[in-house]
Length: 169
Length: 198
Image (cartoon, rainbow over all chains, first blue to last red; front, side, top):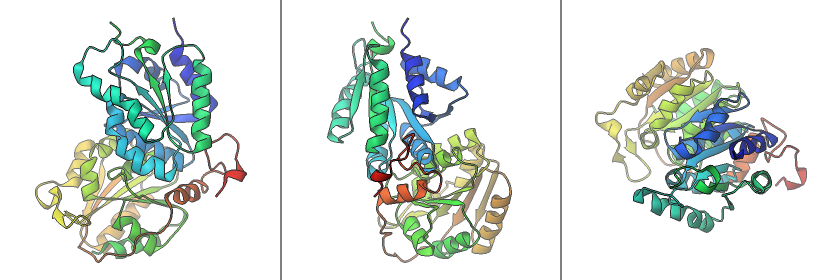
């Protein structure tokens, strides 16, 4: 069985990212459950994804590295927070986004936002990396986190069903 | 009660406590009342002032004061629910409630009708709350909040005020200056990168 969730935890710890703000998603529940059960992390459930961006930004401002986990629909909910807070203040916030609307999607309503996520990241000039295999997962996640802090800008790690197996037909 | 007078009163009781201010006039008047490294000014992201304050409160033991606004808090009332769930002892939310979206043309907000944000806070599970209508009552509530564990929610009814100049500090300077009071690693890297400092 793939250790994708454990790999993400290890890379977060290497960068001393100890505060996680998230809105739940069944497909990435394995990683968020691991985070919640690991005393290294303080995991905060937000009511809405832009709130999670705000919480992570506040943590970083006070000296603690923080990341966000959400679904692509929630990325849609957080675009203004990213544009008017994270980018102008230069908050390095790693965003782990589960992409809906990928292979195996069963719900037509999830397709447009899922499909629009990477193009929106692109026009915002936010680097994004698609996580769809265990191959080089540690290097991709670790390297993206390092880039996030060196550029002092948000970055996105887009997870697909090929990584986590969620909702695949 | 005028927000600028009330902001000056708040600063007169503080040493190194954090103040984070909602976008627009609340930020401009915090800057006018007294610029300090522990002021975090916001520029946009309406609704997220108290969410950012929560993130700060969970990252330091020092007192965090969020100066929020009725229009902004109405946009993200979930922030109060998350604050109540996390219960940070060191967080004080003060909401300037002028019952209008002042900057966009003085349209009435929901607090001019039936919405009571103190009751919203209580309903979310925040136990220590107050609604104040004059500067003396605000001062009393603030002194209690500074000496007792929170989280606190103080709804402060304010009057319409004149517009002041826009706070002139660049956003990335605000973050860099503020964060430096907590850590000598300004970038989040595990080692400081002094050559990257502005």
